Length: 291
Ligand code: GLU
Image (cartoon, rainbow, N blue to C red):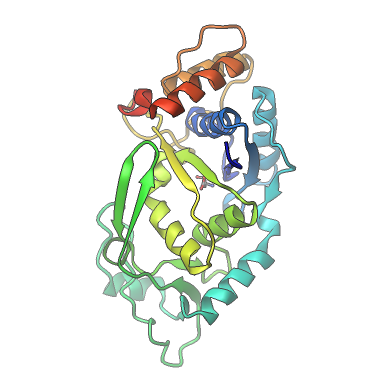
């Protein structure tokens, strides 16, 4: 097997819950099943949304579950220089441009983004700001991106129509997730991204950025989402409970079951690695229809 470097990249906006544990476990299992490395990266790039101390809470939760980073974790909040260098490069190559529009101006000019109700930037500043001061930096998208997911198969997104020129550096000076994640995955030599299906929609933006920066595109596997009883995605935003770590093995078994792995032995992690390896070779039959 070739080099494999995977990662789990939580945003410390809340403690791990049953849904984020599934993504953590899947990425860990995939790395272990490939004899690869697994890294933890704290995605605290959106500082105001990350209460102090939650990074350590998450690292403690992972540790209690036996999911430990093979290298010291990195914090996005300390990596601004790398993001700035990437932005400078994108500006120099014409892939990024300064935008002077306010939110209200964009709302007035843009059409709604059908899937999420987000706004598709109408491209007002693509050819300059007409002397108005630059507020944010945007990536100039072009056409469609086709990509392959190990579970979902061939995917396609029309970036221009569905997403529009997206933000790399926000008007408040914060780095956008899309840029930080691409720079970090490339800098850390990540070969395989395993994460929740809610992020699949971001993948084409990230591939476009990788190409513009001349970096390789990793393999992708998006795992089924864990739904709350009301059918909504479990998320910190809708108050998903932190995982109860009084019985870590039971939590691991539950997360594995969400991945279609029903474990029976006393060593759930070792058993899960074996089962995951077999599933990988078979093409994830147990994940085709989300449980
Ligand atoms: N930080 C993102 C989140 O917690 C995950 C990013 C990723 O895996 O690419 O939703």
